[in-house]
Amino acid sequence: MVFLTGDLGFNALEPLKEAMGERFINAGVAEQNMITVAAALAAQDLEVWIYSIAPFMYARPFEQIRNDICFHHLPVKLIGNGGGYGYGVMGPTHHAIDDYGALLTLPDMAAFVPTFDEDVEAVVEMAGLGDGPAYLRMGRGEPPPGWHVPSFRPWRELTTGGGPTVIGVGPVAGTYIGCFDAMPAELRPNLWVVGALPVEQNPIPEKLLATLDSHPRLVVVEEHVRQGSFASELLLSLSERGCPPKRFSHLCARAHNYGRYGSQKFLRAQSGLDPTTMLSALATI
Amino acid sequence: MTQVLSPTLSPVASDGSALQTKTTTSRRPVCANDVRVAQRRLLKMHYESGVGHIGGNLSSLDSMLVVFHDYLREKDQFFLSKGHSAGALYTTLWSLGRLKDHDLESFHRDDTLLAGHPPAAGIPEITFATGSLGHGVSLSAGTALAFQLKRSDARVVCLTSDGEWQEGSTWEGLIFASHHRLNNLTILVDHNGLQGFGSTTDIASMSPLWQRLQGFDVDVHVIDGHDASAIRSALFFPSERLKVVVLRTVKGHGVSFMENEMKWHYLPLTAELYQQAIDEISSP
Image (cartoon, rainbow over all chains, first blue to last red):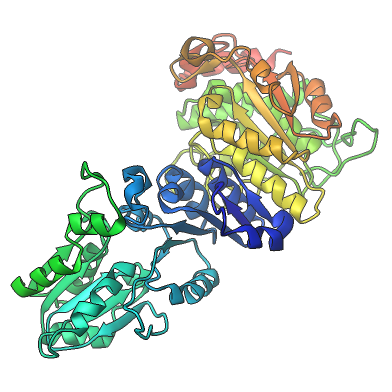
């Protein structure tokens, strides 16, 4: 195994560096080179993991990911920390709200979006077992205090009730658990979270399909722009099955730059991804 | 009729030892006649397929012939970063017997393996699709690093264009390869001085490029890129660090009306010009 970092990981990767010795490589501030070097290492049958913050992982070196990794089906694993608005007040250059949409246009690419901190180990194992390239969009898990985190699976049901269905991508889904649990059971949404993409590689569970069939009101929420969104692929998949939702609402990242800066929570609210906006969407769908 | 380079003598390293090259039979070093045979086959392929990019193929053909015939062994790797010289690479593989005439006859046609730029799969000697400039140095650096990590003595050669050094990623690759002291890697620069829409000095001058390269922790050689003996000497020159060999070449080398003419980056050959080119190359 070889681990490369794009000069990031202070106060986090030191133990890994110590453990891996010469196979821990700080490739410097040169993401294009890092990606291509990783592809070449993988072509020589080395297991290769790369780390950077999410916005630097896919945007600058997109051509290198496409040409050198994906065109050759090389199993390089890309770890991008701080997906979505994770780097908040650092500004729009540090946001990654178009990451998995862009990357999933590439051949054989898989994307993982762990929802809770407890998911990381399983996601790393699952991504490592795959024989193709993978992108891991890392973020901060936000379950309510004391809430039991179910084991990672590509699709998980987090709350159940008689209300509409909500499907979230990654950590943002966890921010709704508290307010959903406080709702009467007959109104409470069925909250699902998806942590592995694309949908065609991670089929929609039969239970979810049955719920959508009997209660065809659906809200999809994701910290990602509308273009190239999970919602787009989900609706295509449901339409091809002949069961598109009768009522649908999409909450997504609305802008790279709002002119005023703030935390991830602030930016989620600006985009209408906060629990208050979610409850409004549920009331009107 | 298929013409191959004469397999008579073994290539010899600078230390006098015989080498096992990409060829499966012992061969003598590449000579001027071998280059002419390959030039003619290259022109025939491009003429029959109506494909341009001839100028940069002729400037780099000599070096590819020497690299493959005289330097590389089975375990070694070559990267054609200037993928638009795929024709010279295919012709070199033909001269080794790795591609056949019928392969070259499919060049640039429907259902071919021989695309206008090196393909992603299907030819063992080509491990990565290239064609977008600025990838080869990093590909070769990663491969050289992998060989070192695996304690292999395999070596890597990468051929870049000169215009390609305007790509920032090429410098990223050089910095990485230099820092890691990849002495199993040799980077060749086909320094023909012409790029897509002008001369390298007119468009984004770094002239002389080799002085820029000498600013790094690398061994830089500047040689005649059409002198097979000089290319061999540079390849085998012992080095404890990354080696960069600047090949001073002529775009369209060997064909008088193509030499140093930018338009031959693009133009295909007419029947008359093809015959003129063949006649020129046939005369030693």
